[in-house]
Amino acid sequence: MDPLQDPIYDLLTEPLALKDGPISLKALASTQLYLKLGHPGLDKALGGGFPSKCLTEIFGRSSAGKTQIALQLCVTAQLPISSGGLGKGAIYIATEREFPVNRFTQIAKSWLHKFPPQTTLEDVNLNVKTILRHDLSMLLSVLQQLPNTLDLSQMGLLILDSIAAPFLGEVLPGRRKALTSLAHELQSLAHKYSLVVVCINQVTEVIRPQALHAPDPSMYTSELEMNPIQLPPGVKLTLGGQVNDPTKLSYQPALGLAWSNLINARILVSRCQSGSLRDNDNSSLSLPTSLKNVGSRRKLVTCACPWAPPASAHFYITADGLQDAEPEAEALIS
Image (cartoon, rainbow, N blue to C red; front, side):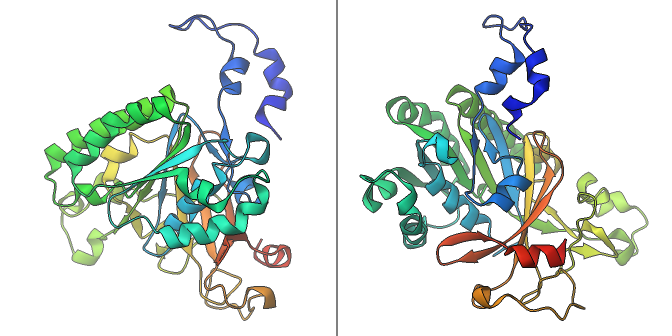
């Protein structure tokens, strides 16, 4: 259900005394847009999509599908609002490698039929502004200068891929200060320009102190590692996803609690057992014929999303982009 159609909003008509004048909760909610991935299963798990004015993190191991989601968002952001998009372009800041132009073009081409008739593939490509910055100081400088671009062009999405790379080698005191500055810039841009801001994050393995025979666990683990991320009820991972307890991850988002306290939402993306419809090694089920050559099934999990309850969805990565797991497959794994 659309949040704005919920009967509860009819009761939220009393204005709030805010700095810029009174505004009702209903009016406040109506200013927030949700960017969809364009697939019912994934969008449902996301509670309608990625919200504007929020800083959302997507984390997962290498090759889990994080960048593929980011690329598809760069396409769907340009769709009209009525089609789940923002009707605007995207800014993609890469910190590890060059923007994958060929892959983006491949995805955009498959979505071209959903755009207005006059839209060309070149138009879709030109509506994505790409920036490559490896250095942390240069990244902060770019963010501080982005208002100049946003004031002159219609941009609705900001992707940072990845947030962790510029911080490699940074000492702890300096890293925390830089993280705070970076998050402040991102939050400021998100609210001022109603942007959907998505940060891709790497992961670090959790070293269990009992495995090291550590007399003092705090010597070897961070606070985040001592309290692993708890997955939503009913969600389990087995392909390198847990140690002993299948509801807790054996890896954590990079940058620790300092970063965790600065974001609004956290989404996990993982790979499932190759060629299986389940997340365990005991399943004898095989992939549907139509998906024989798409590789591993992936799982998206909303670990912490204030606008949506905990949920998960399965998908595949195809030549045309993301694809929901087929209905019959979903029935088998539910």
